[in-house]
Image 1 (spheres, rainbow, N blue to C red):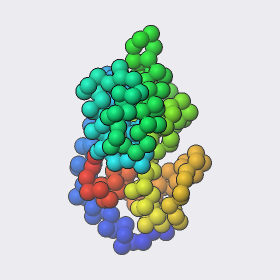
Image 2 (image 1 turned 45 degrees about the horizontal axis):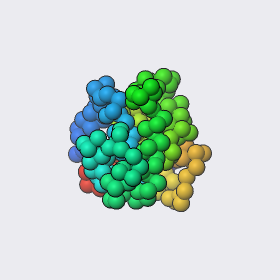
Image 3 (image 1 turned 30 degrees about the vertical axis):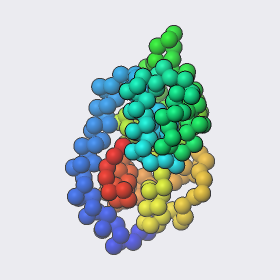
Length: 218
């Protein structure tokens, strides 16, 4: 790949300023999987289901409100929908949350960590999530897995990341939509770019996000 040296040098300077914060955030994600129970892991999954075309902070506020009122695990679709008005496509997403909850409830008990532990690698785990959870595409599944500490080798290709990949010449244009093959191809190119400029892929993901939003969130 051929990159604009000035743009890459600028990115490297930003990385030096944010590297410690990014590394700390990634350690927190990894610890989350070790420390949290099934309900908390499901809360994280629910957050990622809400994120398409919506602000991450608004989605997190909605999910924590549902969790705190006991609706995330017990509420019906109407009660859940009432709390999602800050989220785009709230009617559909309310049903997606119900469907995801049904998928992981076994004998009346939520069980998600044992199932996710049973895969050999992050790619297999992500494929299962995309195929089995309504409303979860490759971007959202990658987001969820990254927030559990499994993000070393995958990318969250949201609009902020894609915009920057175009800026750096990693992709020619921001795609209007992405199926599996296109997502994986861009992810591969981003991983190669990360290697070429000496920034780990998981770090680059958070770096580009913070470059656009001004913060390192989740």
